[in-house]
Length: 303
Image (cartoon, rainbow, N blue to C red):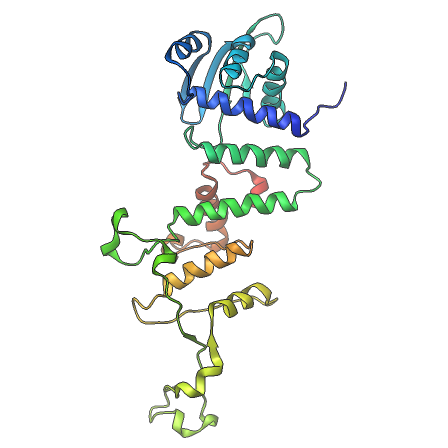
């Protein structure tokens, strides 16, 4: 049996077929009403959930569908695409009682994301295709995949918006992080001891402030802190301390954006989200479900 071909040409045709099929199922095709009514008679479908659609039709009707939107896939190319979605990507279930001898195609299409989240579904399609095509060379593809997941997760958590002021609760009152961010003058905290001289210790032995001039060389810029986080081989533990409203959360949001720009993977976790769990359990059981927007987690993602 010849080896299946999953090259770029096959991938492109499969993406085209997948796209037009989902657009038709979502009633988002820009075609005449008369043509749409004919298609609805020829291509019957039913959404069981927002991610699962049952379709019954014939290949020639699917061929007509692609011709109407200018894709012009042949019947054989459509069969090839359905086979890719079934055997390769495993997002189509073949519901036919007999695989041969019938013109009617009856199958179920399973999406990764909500039916109207077109961008997310197409991105996942391309990512899954490449992951399955070249399992021996996954590093770059997996990095892109996780970068996109992290970026989407941070956007969902509104890391790029001001989240600390309850008076900004309405969307129309919120601003982009870049519009309101003001660089902070962070200073690395000094720890003085009795050996530093009595002028730095009060009567109770507490640390007191030093002159600004004594602390200039300890100033920490955003770029300097990011460089330390990126290049330091030792575990990084940084605590940002300041008065309420001084910009601590906004600064952390800015650091997360900077790490993403450097193609690193910042994970934003609030202590309130952990609720007594270990960090490992929270990441593997709760955070992953939120990020991939699925209830069941592929064990491969937990490795």
